[in-house]
Length: 180
Image (cartoon, rainbow, N blue to C red; front, side, top):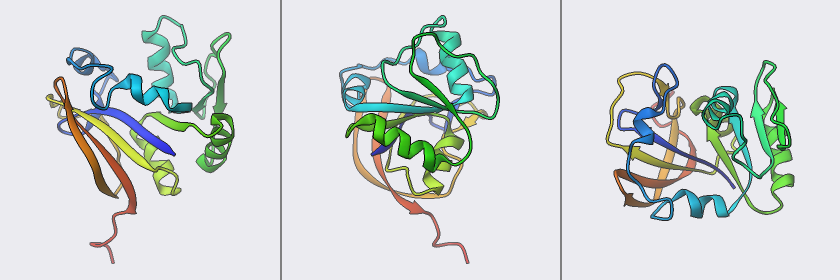
Protein backbone atom coordinates (compact mmCIF):
# COMPACT_ATOMS: atom_id res chain seq x y z
CA UNK A 1 0.00 0.00 0.00
CA UNK A 2 1.40 3.40 -1.03
CA UNK A 3 0.60 6.17 1.44
CA UNK A 4 1.19 9.87 0.95
CA UNK A 5 1.80 10.75 4.61
CA UNK A 6 2.36 14.48 4.97
CA UNK A 7 1.42 17.73 6.64
CA UNK A 8 -0.21 20.75 5.06
CA UNK A 9 -1.32 24.24 5.89
CA UNK A 10 -5.02 25.01 6.13
CA UNK A 11 -4.83 26.52 2.64
CA UNK A 12 -3.24 23.39 1.16
CA UNK A 13 0.52 23.95 0.94
CA UNK A 14 3.22 21.51 2.06
CA UNK A 15 5.99 24.13 1.89
CA UNK A 16 6.21 27.87 1.37
CA UNK A 17 7.44 29.36 -1.95
CA UNK A 18 11.06 29.07 -0.69
CA UNK A 19 10.55 25.40 0.32
CA UNK A 20 10.66 26.32 4.00
CA UNK A 21 8.91 24.14 6.57
CA UNK A 22 9.47 26.51 9.51
CA UNK A 23 5.69 26.89 9.82
CA UNK A 24 5.43 23.11 10.31
CA UNK A 25 8.34 22.48 12.64
CA UNK A 26 7.04 24.86 15.30
CA UNK A 27 3.66 23.08 15.64
CA UNK A 28 3.14 20.93 18.74
CA UNK A 29 2.30 17.25 18.19
CA UNK A 30 3.04 13.86 19.71
CA UNK A 31 5.12 11.45 17.62
CA UNK A 32 3.36 8.58 19.38
CA UNK A 33 -0.10 10.24 19.38
CA UNK A 34 -2.97 9.75 16.90
CA UNK A 35 -1.61 9.57 13.34
CA UNK A 36 1.86 9.85 14.88
CA UNK A 37 5.02 9.42 12.91
CA UNK A 38 6.40 6.62 15.11
CA UNK A 39 3.46 4.28 14.51
CA UNK A 40 3.35 5.11 10.82
CA UNK A 41 7.06 4.43 10.28
CA UNK A 42 6.76 1.10 12.09
CA UNK A 43 4.84 -0.26 9.10
CA UNK A 44 6.96 1.26 6.30
CA UNK A 45 9.36 -0.81 4.21
CA UNK A 46 10.42 1.65 1.48
CA UNK A 47 10.16 5.37 0.73
CA UNK A 48 9.95 7.55 -2.36
CA UNK A 49 10.36 11.31 -2.71
CA UNK A 50 11.01 14.02 -5.24
CA UNK A 51 14.33 15.79 -5.70
CA UNK A 52 13.28 18.95 -3.82
CA UNK A 53 12.30 16.86 -0.79
CA UNK A 54 15.59 14.96 -1.01
CA UNK A 55 17.58 18.19 -1.08
CA UNK A 56 15.57 19.55 1.86
CA UNK A 57 16.27 16.41 3.92
CA UNK A 58 19.99 16.62 3.17
CA UNK A 59 20.14 20.32 4.07
CA UNK A 60 18.22 19.88 7.33
CA UNK A 61 19.80 16.65 8.54
CA UNK A 62 23.38 17.96 8.14
CA UNK A 63 24.07 15.45 5.39
CA UNK A 64 22.97 12.48 7.51
CA UNK A 65 20.32 10.19 6.06
CA UNK A 66 17.40 9.68 8.47
CA UNK A 67 15.95 6.54 6.89
CA UNK A 68 17.22 2.98 7.36
CA UNK A 69 15.01 1.83 4.49
CA UNK A 70 15.46 1.62 0.74
CA UNK A 71 14.64 5.06 -0.69
CA UNK A 72 13.90 6.18 -4.24
CA UNK A 73 14.39 9.76 -5.35
CA UNK A 74 12.54 10.75 -8.51
CA UNK A 75 14.69 13.24 -10.36
CA UNK A 76 15.66 14.35 -13.83
CA UNK A 77 18.99 15.78 -12.67
CA UNK A 78 22.12 14.53 -10.98
CA UNK A 79 22.03 14.72 -7.18
CA UNK A 80 24.67 13.89 -4.58
CA UNK A 81 24.42 10.40 -3.08
CA UNK A 82 24.51 9.74 0.66
CA UNK A 83 27.39 7.48 1.72
CA UNK A 84 26.15 4.25 3.28
CA UNK A 85 22.48 4.91 2.55
CA UNK A 86 20.28 2.82 0.26
CA UNK A 87 19.21 5.73 -1.97
CA UNK A 88 18.26 4.99 -5.57
CA UNK A 89 17.79 7.72 -8.14
CA UNK A 90 15.13 7.20 -10.78
CA UNK A 91 13.24 9.04 -13.48
CA UNK A 92 10.42 8.30 -15.85
CA UNK A 93 7.37 6.15 -15.22
CA UNK A 94 6.44 5.86 -11.53
CA UNK A 95 5.00 2.38 -12.16
CA UNK A 96 8.52 0.97 -12.50
CA UNK A 97 9.60 2.56 -9.23
CA UNK A 98 6.43 1.36 -7.49
CA UNK A 99 7.15 -2.23 -8.56
CA UNK A 100 10.76 -1.99 -7.32
CA UNK A 101 9.63 -0.46 -4.02
CA UNK A 102 7.02 -3.15 -3.50
CA UNK A 103 9.65 -5.88 -3.92
CA UNK A 104 12.10 -4.12 -1.60
CA UNK A 105 9.47 -3.47 1.11
CA UNK A 106 8.76 -7.22 1.46
CA UNK A 107 5.12 -6.89 2.43
CA UNK A 108 5.46 -3.65 4.39
CA UNK A 109 3.97 -0.31 3.41
CA UNK A 110 5.33 2.26 0.98
CA UNK A 111 5.69 5.92 2.02
CA UNK A 112 5.53 8.76 -0.44
CA UNK A 113 7.38 11.47 1.52
CA UNK A 114 6.82 14.39 -0.87
CA UNK A 115 6.04 16.32 -2.94
CA UNK A 116 2.54 16.94 -4.08
CA UNK A 117 3.17 16.64 -7.80
CA UNK A 118 4.90 13.29 -7.29
CA UNK A 119 1.91 12.09 -5.27
CA UNK A 120 -0.24 13.20 -8.19
CA UNK A 121 1.84 11.15 -10.63
CA UNK A 122 1.35 8.01 -8.54
CA UNK A 123 -2.38 8.80 -8.22
CA UNK A 124 -2.74 9.22 -11.98
CA UNK A 125 -1.09 5.83 -12.44
CA UNK A 126 -3.64 4.31 -10.03
CA UNK A 127 -0.92 3.50 -7.48
CA UNK A 128 -1.68 5.90 -4.63
CA UNK A 129 -3.79 4.03 -2.08
CA UNK A 130 -4.22 6.56 0.70
CA UNK A 131 -3.47 10.09 1.81
CA UNK A 132 -2.73 10.69 5.48
CA UNK A 133 -2.59 14.39 6.12
CA UNK A 134 -2.07 16.53 9.21
CA UNK A 135 -3.50 20.02 8.78
CA UNK A 136 -1.66 22.76 10.66
CA UNK A 137 -3.40 25.94 11.87
CA UNK A 138 -1.41 28.09 9.44
CA UNK A 139 -2.07 29.68 6.06
CA UNK A 140 0.70 30.64 3.64
CA UNK A 141 -1.19 32.05 0.66
CA UNK A 142 1.28 30.44 -1.75
CA UNK A 143 3.79 27.62 -1.94
CA UNK A 144 4.06 23.97 -2.91
CA UNK A 145 0.54 22.51 -3.22
CA UNK A 146 -0.49 19.46 -1.23
CA UNK A 147 -1.81 17.49 -4.20
CA UNK A 148 -2.29 19.35 -7.50
CA UNK A 149 -4.63 16.78 -9.05
CA UNK A 150 -8.37 16.19 -9.15
CA UNK A 151 -8.98 13.19 -6.90
CA UNK A 152 -12.00 11.68 -5.23
CA UNK A 153 -11.12 10.70 -1.66
CA UNK A 154 -13.05 8.82 1.01
CA UNK A 155 -12.53 9.76 4.67
CA UNK A 156 -11.55 6.65 6.64
CA UNK A 157 -10.69 8.15 10.04
CA UNK A 158 -9.75 11.41 11.74
CA UNK A 159 -8.29 12.65 15.03
CA UNK A 160 -6.51 15.56 16.64
CA UNK A 161 -2.80 15.44 17.49
CA UNK A 162 -1.48 18.57 19.19
CA UNK A 163 -2.16 21.52 16.91
CA UNK A 164 -3.06 19.28 13.95
CA UNK A 165 -6.34 17.97 12.61
CA UNK A 166 -5.35 14.63 11.08
CA UNK A 167 -7.19 12.48 8.57
CA UNK A 168 -6.73 9.27 6.61
CA UNK A 169 -8.34 9.14 3.17
CA UNK A 170 -8.69 6.23 0.77
CA UNK A 171 -8.02 7.29 -2.82
CA UNK A 172 -11.21 6.41 -4.72
CA UNK A 173 -9.85 7.61 -8.08
CA UNK A 174 -9.97 10.67 -10.29
CA UNK A 175 -12.67 13.24 -9.63
CA UNK A 176 -14.78 13.06 -12.78
CA UNK A 177 -18.45 13.83 -12.11
CA UNK A 178 -18.24 17.44 -13.28
CA UNK A 179 -16.18 16.67 -16.42
CA UNK A 180 -17.69 15.85 -19.77
